[in-house]
Amino acid sequence: MAQIAHGDVERQSQGIAARRASSTNWQKLFGMITRHAVLILVSILFMFPFYWMIITALKDNTRVFTYPIEWWPDPVRWENFPTAINYAGFPFFLYLRNSVFYSLSVSIGTILSCAAVGYGFARLRFPGRDLLFMVTVATLMIPGIVTFIPTFILFKNLGMLGTYAPLVLPAFFGNAFFIFMMRQFFQGMPAELTDAARVDGASEFRIFWQIMLPLVRPALLVMAVFTFLWTWHEFFGPLVYLSEQRQYPLSLGLFAFRAQRTTEWSLMMAASTLATLPLVVVFFFAQRYFLEGIRLTGIKG
Image (cartoon, rainbow, N blue to C red):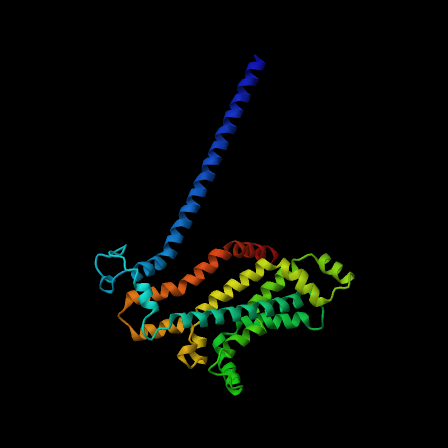
């Protein structure tokens, strides 16, 4: 009898454990479905402006503001894209070349300067290092418009107005946010790597260039993508410093196009779609390294 009772108790315990496990699995499944549903909803909300821009670019101009709303253009006007590119007074490829040059130059300057300064703050020891780092980070609290007028006067006295120099040169002197990010990342690298290199007789520059930079490649790519995106959409700086239309990047070129053809919404959206495509392509090919860099910077920081 005791053995039978013991078997019943054991079976009841196993049944309770199975029910608890099943309940836990259902809770996990419900939580996962809820999270994915929220993410899908948020993604749709963020994608909606891009979708609206594309369908507007494919519509006839007379059907852009029709009611009820046309969620798919009928007929589809693919010719709006070549029309926008070849439109008189809108040299699209010239603006595109200027934007690529501007964004790549600023990205290269930011990567080189911020990586070097971040490595110095993280790995080199010199008097006043921590104080200088605090001052560098404190500049993040200064609004950009406060330093804009002195910077403008400086470049005016140097005779650089009307060129890309005022837009590109500051990038080669570092960015406080990315300097902070790179310092935190370099501090997370094992000290034994640099110590072993010094024992082998490697110079500090060689350690930085050949050992440390390849290890922080994901962080460099994050910095490059962010800088490229911010520079590609930059409007105020080129508006102030550039004086000739042939120097305009796409951001200013689209503004000039809108000023000339206010009512051509389909062509305007076609040109905006073409201006956005390079960013989509860059992120599409760099997303794996981009997400890896964000994950690693979050751990090291």
